[in-house]
Length: 379
Image (tube, rainbow, N blue to C red):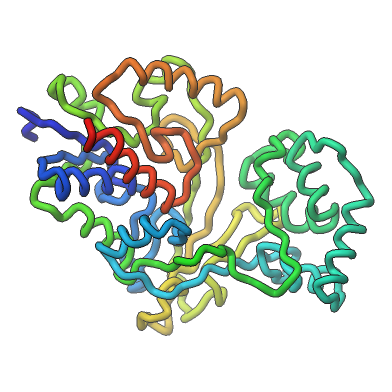
């Protein structure tokens, strides 16, 4: 690997790193080296085809593109087309299936009623009034104050306990701030105007982003192994864990990770939908993904399908970090790393892991485009 005279090094080839590398090569006309410790580009958004079933699957769990940002949408469409997939999620609770987020169908199905929108609003208001929390102090109190105890117990309590491996009464209230409740039959999971899955898959999208001849890619390469050989005047764009960059010297940040259990099932359709949540705490996994449903435009085998059971767990060193926990204690530690990072004038930290921020894909892309314009192109 030739690092002599290198001006730009991107660490990590997820959306943050890939977009910035593309901009450096195409807009600045400069050579850029992208290194990734994995055997493929694309970070946690990567997809590939399972050879046994022929189904393209998201290697690290379902990723659905959705955005309100027209700039991000137009940028992505320069490198791929999107199908018309609209995400819908179902929840299995005690052997019965309900729509999520909670909507009028969920309410009527759960309570055995046939309420109209106005009646359901009044009904849920009465459920909420059975327990009042002037200032909800934790996730459970916040959720109960929004949907009432029965719906909380059925759809939030067990799922949250599995997702965070923590009693919801010990989790901060703001985790549930975006809990949507709909009093109509809208079953779409997202309301964004632009949605879909890349027609040729995320793997193909990343290959297009990174195909410029000025972009050099080195896979199976750990940043720590080349760190001492990087020219002192090289600009490093780092999208790995910020605490790992500093060898955890200011403390280990809290991260969540996943254990994914893949399976090829001898049937043409395992569950009839792309994602099925399991809200019972007695079921060890949080959800099952069935990836054939993301590409209705494709012809997949009728006798095989590819599924993935998802288990959430606490991150430990050596695991892949998926998203930050962001407790108050975590943010104290993160601010120490921000102060340490400020002393490095030739390193930019970004992406979910580099900025310790839970961002959707479109937010990461927007973050990358702004970072390029403000901190790289103008420098």
